[in-house]
Length: 225
Image 1 (cartoon, rainbow, N blue to C red):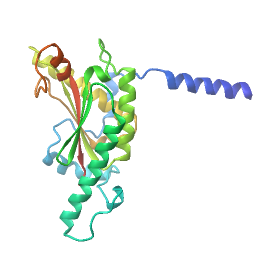
Image 2 (cartoon, rainbow, N blue to C red):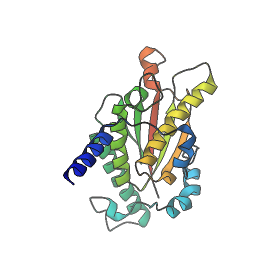
Image 3 (cartoon, rainbow, N blue to C red):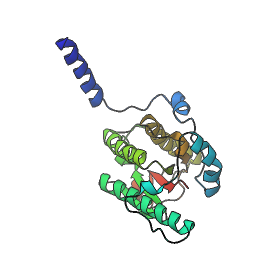
Image 4 (cartoon, rainbow, N blue to C red):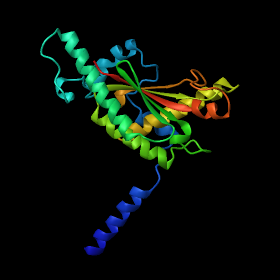
């Protein structure tokens, strides 16, 4: 009995130490069932809301914020205050948990944007999530599971490439790979909007350093209303 327990313990330890490997590409759509492969516009979120709620999603409630909102004022004012507090707490949790090179957390109105430079989360010469990326995405997954009253857009970007078809394919691969990771780590896929934008929307110059920055995955997190 003792040997069996030791063997099970060793197996568990080896499994915990094994590097993360994305599942076979042909199975990705099974993991991403329920995700939307489009931009996360206001119209898209409104259209998806019934599906999201039907799959166990929820909107932000008063119990979701650590400080109570005012009992005075109209409902819209109080709802907006509640949302701002909720997203502020999400921003702080992400900022506090992701103090790593190549990662930034920004606020954009009522939304939070996390920029993940490709080399910070993926292998240098392979389309695979790295050990560092595994740790980073695992931290993000835990925070997003806690702050679950949100929609998440996962957008992949490349640096400037002459072949736009290849750029779109590479950016889609990055975005979907991160989406699959989230799905495997307990994120409700009806929260996800997944897009590959190729070389669009560069955030740095197209020199040697800037190109590394432009290869990235952006997570745009919006409150579920």
